[in-house]
Amino acid sequence: MGAQKSVLKTSLLALAAIALALALTAGSVLIQSVGPEMSVSGNLCGPTGDQFCYEPTLKGGFPFAYLYDKPGISVGRQLGPEDELKGVWFIADWLAYWALVVFAYRTAILLKKKH
Image 1: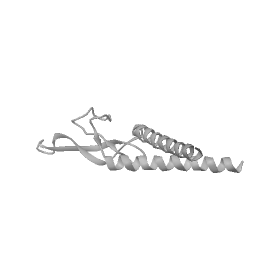
Image 2: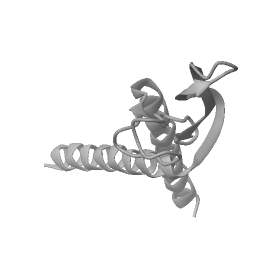
Image 3: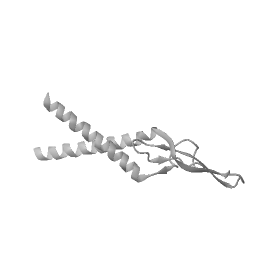
Image 4: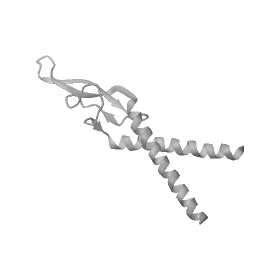
């Protein structure tokens, strides 16, 4: 019976860490920056007025930006569901937050044992 409780507790803690890291990752999209990546924002530029226009790209996510604004497709200078999600960077962001959550939990356990 004790082993089952231990497995259940460990599973619940793991799920809680995953969910918290996912929430932190999703919330980190509110931390936004611009550039240095450039994206096409129109096609009436250059001396002849028929070349692409470029502007620094708005992006969201911390520590790794994973959502990139797509000018001309979405509301300009605003991130939303129609913008480009870079899955690799989303996973990297999530893993960073997951490691932080696990580190904080283990540190709290160690500090609790000392007192």
